[in-house]
Image 1 (tube, one colour):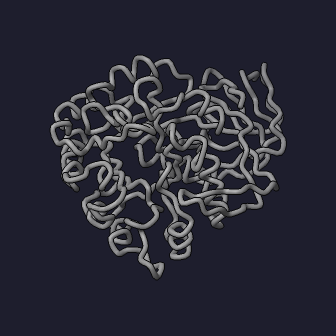
Image 2 (cartoon, helix red, strand yellow):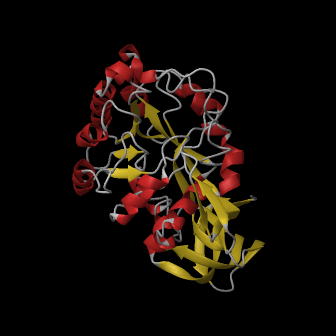
Length: 375
């Protein structure tokens, strides 16, 4: 049988699906059709020397380009890092989601899913010159509206986003998180909670999260780091993981430090998911993109299989989207092609500390909906 597209010569690597072998991957009619040897197609792409993995998922991005000051354009960013699914986390709220959907989501070749902000207008004032925490005004906490919009768009909205901390909720402390949890309960969705500097404390936030909720910025620097000064993981995090809370990197411009990351990995507390938190103030450093963030976990000796799972099957589970994050005949027609090269790369954290990793990840292209997308 002749397929539409075949990727040939690559190492097919889907740790969650038990795949790790040299094989061809064929696509037909927008779906992954077959994994095997000697497959024929109208278009053949030689990806020798590269890994063919499930379509990468960046669980924390900001891509409401043109609608919010912090967002980057989704298509160039996705191509840059071979990302098949971008998850926007709170750029839009119920008051401006319609514009996000009409002008960005529905026009994007790359899949965009959304954690809808509990704030009516999302993150509306985030720039080098204007910074206003949207959770500092409880009048903006739009629980009814968020539930209505989430129920109306189940194909786009996978959860509710909220930001709390000194810089985002200010004197309101943890109150916006409680509003978000109530709204998420009403529409049957998980939440993603941002935490910055206290108050509230890291522990207070994690203590309120439910199984399946995501705590992003899990390797923050002090203050509100996930570990004590002696390297012990805070007990609230251990209890949270035990009950099913998920811990996400969410690198961004201020939420990944080598000190916290080393301590967490040494204590046996790797992240559940790896994400970039890419936005206008960190796309040119220190976060850059999803591959650079993945590279940082490789530098901390996280196994390649675990790193790939943390950007494929794990975020798919977090979003309750079992169709994503896997390579399966008959399944979604996404795959990312990346190379792991023996080339050193200098990696920086948000405090300016650097570390050199002997290997670097490079985007070689991807398949979205069965069609080849060049890097």
